[in-house]
Image (cartoon, rainbow, N blue to C red; front, side):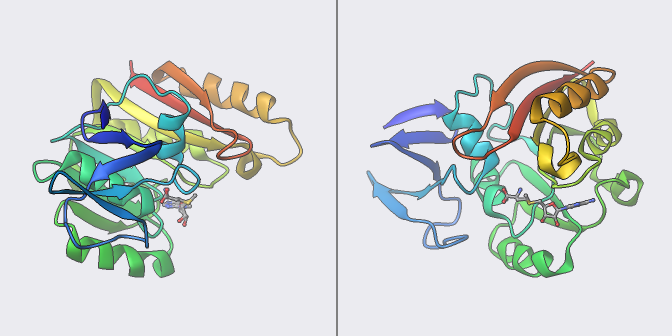
Length: 216
Ligand SMILES: C[S@@+](CC[C@H](N)C(=O)[O-])C[C@H]1O[C@@H](n2cnc3c(N)ncnc32)[C@H](O)[C@@H]1O
């Protein structure tokens, strides 16, 4: 088994995280026992962070013990793997606006003590100010104001703290070419962040760009 990053593994071509709650699956994923330890399969077709790792992400700021603000948690597919990586000493503040997704997310939080659910609009960080300083802001919201949201949530990061954003060009403007939208979004982000890595998520996700950012 290869450890790609702290807490992220590869075995026989599969991406894996060590299951924080052995015996419990989060979304019907396969589990494997390797030398007495249970791992969960991380499907890059269902997770943009998984896809970014598969597409060659070089720096992984989410580590054991990290405090992560996760925007657009949905039912918690990727959040569950982030929860595995940060482990018992880390925390994941999972923000989601849709009440129907929150129902499943709450079930995940019952099982995973390090995930804290927040029913809120990621465009209004003043509503969850109590989160305090975090190491990483991760954003995967299918929303036209993705860049603005990331900038607003940079208030939770210290200088040098990391942002990760999956940009879905179709959610921003279906009439424009993805490259045009990415250039516009990057320009907007560059006021607040240095762009450290750019990763095209194809073939896992069409018309998605993943950016690793560092707060200026
Ligand atoms: C692509 S899905 C996220 C998938 C999830 N990150 C994963 O990998 O498991 C986008 C999510 O963003 C949520 N969303 C959209 N606008 C939002 C907002 N303003 N605040 C918080 N969540 C939002 C949607 O309800 C949806 O659940």
